[in-house]
Length: 97
Image (cartoon, rainbow, N blue to C red):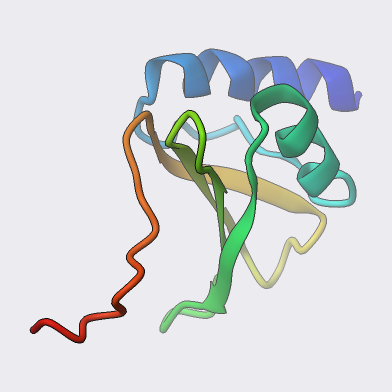
């Protein structure tokens, strides 16, 4: 069930630990769950060089973020890659480099 899987992610997220196998959640309502539980909304999505679909969620008020990966062979589940309690959006996009 979705609730049980998400409880596993909540435990992981609370401690911002590295990815642990088996802690994946269904992708069909991930955006809604992240917004409801953590006020994190999708900030970035892309395809990694090894074919994973990567999504990064962010809450600019609390500065929390979570990254999920979706394996191309299992598009129905998203697995946590990393999370943190400090983050920011870079406004100058590297202009000062």
